[in-house]
Image (cartoon, rainbow, N blue to C red; front, side, top):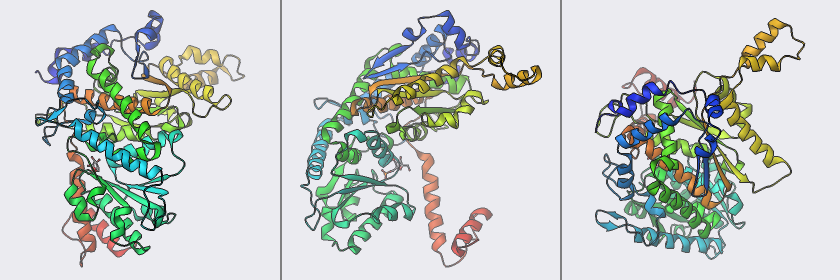
Length: 545
Ligand code: F6P
């Protein structure tokens, strides 16, 4: 396979992408653009017509997908090949939501039965908690669940659970602790009763400092409040692939939910890591979430490249990152329940595609993963949208809107939708100087002022956006939406020839952090590191500046 930048499609795109007409013109030339450049899959609708692409751009992007072997890479992932080559692991979050009858093999063993057994164990636990059958050591019903985990063992459960609030049981509350800052756990525990609280400790590795420290503090709190070592079995469960370590830590073997090394942390909410979600929305709804993701998996695995939602979104991202120098991508959710989703996609995409070498270990000579950021519409319109509209950086945007609200209230939802659609329109069409002058025609300003203000009102437009719609935010549509972004991330990584499934970049900081921790507690000041690190450590030891 030729190097990415040597492919014919790449070279043609480098030239062609600069020659595509302004989107205003593209829409004027082709009234059928919306119909031709929108599609539905798995309960989602994608309008990608407001992008800097014409027919030739599409054929070149599809050629790029072919020249880089995208279809074979997709197959390899679904079939459980060892595509996470630096960790020698298969990448099978799709097996977590596969049909019970599926046969997906890792090292010759079908992993689906184990997945199904774990779902059954989850169902038993979730049923017992929700029906009040799981009681604490004093016989009281559990009322509060505290999920302790970080990264992929935190953000997915928290954000999905938050997004599905309309489906929550009224009998339980779920709290999350991730940060090792003692304030995070102290603030939570202060409001809880140890007799009615259950902790879910989520750590794939069972070796993450923050999670271990928070769990130890939770255990201390429980014992100090009157619980005994034996009572821990009724108040602590764990989700981990490291059963030995969890048992050594004191978690009852019966209370350990397994996960597997072929599930990446940031792709793990579909496994028992999703327990806090299942506790709050119930197992039927959790299974609907899996079904929604499976629907998107089936679409991704089978639809032709030119009608494949994750492929289209992935190729567009490559277009902007590599041929229009976009360094970030914004996700704007027009639904209050989805306000946390940009942070989830940020973790998913940036931990996956923030890579600087190819699979073969060669330095890339092209941009890889952009910065992913975003927030809740309409709030952002009164803050950072200004820069998206008139700043000098090109920031492709995704707008996400359910057509029906869970909380219909007067004109609220129509206003929300009008803002969403109005923003995509403004980004696309912009405002020319003559339009700005025309708007000022009836103003009392003098001609010079009018001209000055008009210049400031000019918006170049031609700013790309995708709009994703769904009927309503449900477990199934949310499952499909998250799977869409998982696969979009995969498509980009596949084109860029990088490993989207390891995360070596986070390791050095962890190692150095442990070294610093020892120096903070050492009897003497730090002298052996660089001057800045020594200085900061010694200030901390002193306790004041
Ligand atoms: O530090 C990054 C990371 O390894 C993530 O990839 C992972 O989701 C998170 O830490 C937590 O890891 P664990 O589930 O093993 O505690």
